[in-house]
Length: 491
Image (tube, rainbow, N blue to C red; front, side, top):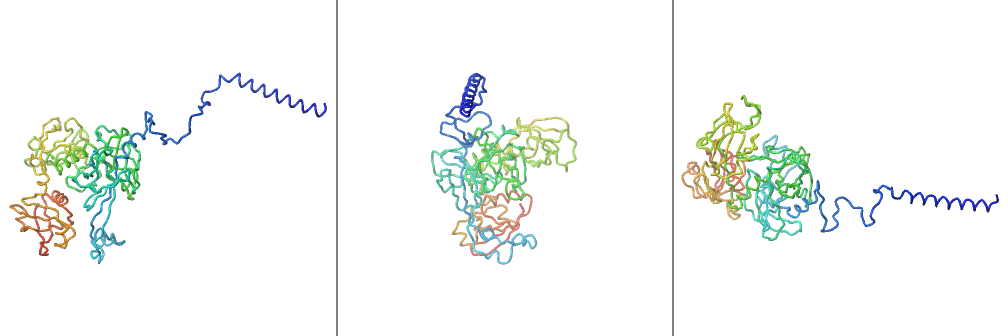
């Protein structure tokens, strides 16, 4: 075979091989697995990509729908605080001096007052501009600025605050706003997916996901005597700046107001806590309608049945032990006694103190609730007509909230503070018969501190006095002529 014949043979063999391969392909074409076929119009996209406004969120586990609803309704809040040296100046040695000497370094109080700012989040709850946030986000604020997701800015009006739940309500002058509706936090289940929406580290409109880790959690962060902690615990990442933001379910309903984190570092370390929506909504409704929360109480001293300090014989370590019943209280009138173990309010099971406080606080003075308890091995149910903190059955108005023990109190104006040469305080006037008069206090006295704790406003003063029932208090302040005075009072 010559060279030409060899090349021709190889060429024919190649053509024949191609024909055989093509024939085999056609022979088995109908048996090909369907997964290797792909329509040419399909695009490869990241899972978070939304192509257009007609995008339909698929059924099942998906965060896109809820995030899309929530983010336009969550706002960024900046509070400007007129701070004295205590707040505006911070020495690197301050903590050391406080730890070892009980006070700040020499010259600390000589610093010029400065403006300080705090930042947090809030949730629009109506199309005409009502916003719910945490009290600690706007506490002592001189000016509150709200920035919407579309970057519009508004100066907000403070409608009211409730330090006992750490809830506050603001109002901005706007219409047609996106807003979130309250969901039912009682229906939230441990293990359920939730989203936290807020502005951590001023990173606006940040969404994080997690599950509900626990309910009815008390972490001891609210220092008020009547503070209510029945938090929803989640593992959604929450950091400084998230306070006052939204905790939502996958339907986009507001089920909590993000409030606190458990952390050894100051930043997220695994768990966050939110005020449940059922309690938050009641507080919000009260503040909008009355300007002050209508707080209902049973009038009992309580402790968890599981508390190791209790030496009692019970069938199970669940429920709330009644350690004392106050005179003329709703509990006394209903027939509750020391030693009773409360296990239900209405139809809701009560496992601990946090849950009992939460369920009672949802009501107003004058409301009736059914209390189921165990006594001497028997289960009984009574109806209690709730009272307010003054042991009365009436609605408290905002003006009434500023009347304490026969005297009227109000926040001092800027001009008055200049006259008194003070940074902040509460003026007491129209003093009638009562504890103030008995202590020798005269009209026009500016209260600047109680038990060495600076007083910035009436709400703070009321909270401290409520926490001091049955104790003595030391009142410090000034008169218009500059004379300082101290008064000791039994409260």
